[in-house]
Image (cartoon, rainbow, N blue to C red; front, top):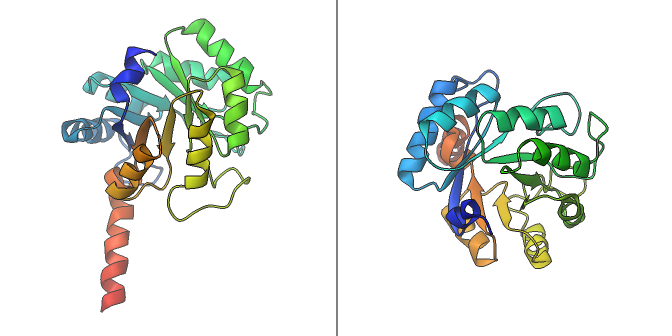
Length: 227
């Protein structure tokens, strides 16, 4: 097992992402958010966008999981080999990409995408964002290094659960072949701890830590409903 993976085992990874139209959509801001997350105990950072990734890689000394979200296709998380190469070029140690069995915009298979990326960047690890155990099995066969539960409830194969999809978590852990990063709707410390208890290698938390608009909305709704 690589030193990188050992460094995040049993630890928290924080996703630092802002979206179009949001005030925090700025590489310098995202780099500062990432620094604050590391200061709070994050063992790694997950982030999107080439400019943000370059800024974050320069600002923190922990591993960075990089991706881009592009295109009109349902497959939009680092969807093509070209996208994956651009993410790796920013200095990210891990490249996250769509790990579902859906057709990719460049018509390459997941295996072809991973092979092409590793041929150019042999040291880079690949995190396959999966939506189901079927996706995970295919990602293992395709050469992925990490399985993520990121797309459970978003790929059309499974219903969207209110919190983490624990059934998918258990299924991926039961494969016992690759580290599993639990990601998606982890909104409380208790859920993050539960993921580790269920055998996850690491837990990725984004919205509940780094998305002020959503967090504010939770509190505003609670306050208004009580009045």
